[in-house]
Image (cartoon, rainbow, N blue to C red; front, top):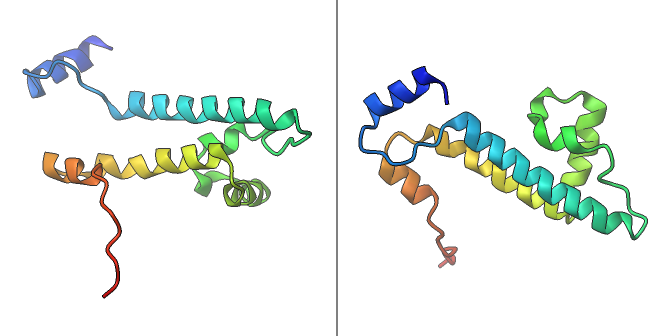
Length: 119
C-alpha cells in the first residue's frame, strides 16, 4: 500500500483494523475466477473438451469491451453449465457492492432470502 493511501485510510477510517479497496478486491475475485477456470479446464480437457482453451481474457474483460466474435464465444460459454461461468457470475454480482451508499444496504445485499411464492 502506498504511503498516501495508508495516510488517507488512517484519516477516513481511524478505527478500522482492515480496509479492502476496490482494486485489490477486484483483483482477488478475478484470480478466483481464473483458479476455477484452470481447474475446470484441466478436468474437462481430459475428456477431450477444450471449450475453455484460450478463454482467460473472456472471463477477465468487461463483456462490453470484447470484439463481436469474442463476445459471441463468451456468450456461448456462459450458456454452458460450467463452474467457471458460475464463478464469473458471482464476481460480476459483487460489482454492485461498490455502489452501496451505507452499511445497511451492503449488509442487506449479501443476505440470502428465500424466494417469495406467488399467492
